[in-house]
Image (cartoon, rainbow, N blue to C red; front, side, top):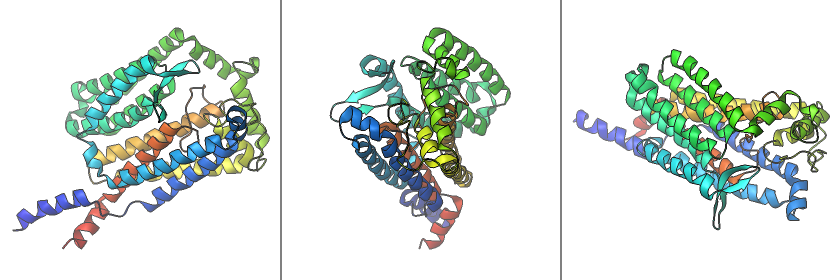
Length: 388
C-alpha cells in the first residue's frame, strides 16, 4: 500500500508548490526594483522633458514595466520550475529565430539593430529572452547528460555549439555585451555541471582570438577600447560618456548631492537613465548610497546561490545558479563600465536602467528562482508532513 501511495505524494507536491517562498530574496528584489524606479525617475527627468515635453514620461513607462514585471514574477513563482525543462529546447529555438530576424526587421538605434517593434506594444529585445533561454537549455542538457559531462562529446561540443550560434546571431546586430554575458554564464554553468577544466583554458584562447577578430571587423569596438584607455584624450567625442560619468561619480563625494540634485543628468551625460544610471546614483546618493545598493545586489545574488544549493534536484540547482550568475555578471559589467574599470559594452544595470524588456525579463527570472525556493528539500519535507 505504501509503495503505491508514495509516488502520488511526490507528484502532488510537484504540482501544488505549497512550500514557502524565500522571503529575504523577495524583499531584496522588491527593494531594488523600488529604488531603481525612483532613481530612474530622477535620472531621466531632464531628458524626458527635453525629448517628450513631460518630465515623468520615462518614469510612468518604467513604473508600468515594473508592475507588469512584478505580476510576471508572481506568476513565475507559482509556475513549477520543472515545467520549463521540456520546453527549454523550443524556447531556445524560438529565440534563435527572433535573433535571426532582428537585423532584418528590427529597429536601428545607435548604430545597432537590437530591437523588434511590435505594433501596439512598443520595442522588444530578443537578446533578453535569449539569456533566459540559454540558462534553461543548459540546465536541461547538463541534467540529462549527468556523468557524461566529463566527455568532449557531451560536456563540451553541444554547449559550444549553442554558444557559437548565439554569438554569431548576436554579432549580426551587433550586440557584444549580450554575447559576453551569455557566453560567460554558459561557461559557469558548464563548470558547475562537470565539464573538465582543460576545456575552459582552450575556450579562453578561442575567446581571445574571437575578441581580436571582433575588434578588427567592427571599428566602433576598437574605438571604445581606445576611449577606455584614455577617455580624456577626446572628452568631447569618443570619451564623452566616460568623462561625464567620472565627473558625476566624483562630484557625488561621500554623501552625494542629494536625491534629484544631479547636475550631469541635465543632458551632459548621455544614456544617464539607461546604461549610465549608476553614475547618477553615485552623484546623488554619494559613495555611501552606492555601496548600499551594491550590497543589496550582493545579498540578492548570494541568496540566489543559497537557493540553488538547497534545490531539490540538479535542474533546479543549475537554473537558480545560472540566473544568479546572469544577474551578477550584468551588475559587475555595468558598474565596471560606468566607473571605467572595464571598456564600454552597453550593459544595463538590472532593475535600474530604463527598458521594458530587460526589467520584465529580470523580474520573471527572479520569479523562477522564487519557485525553486518553494521546492527546497526542507520545504518538501514540511509539505509531506502536512499532507494527509
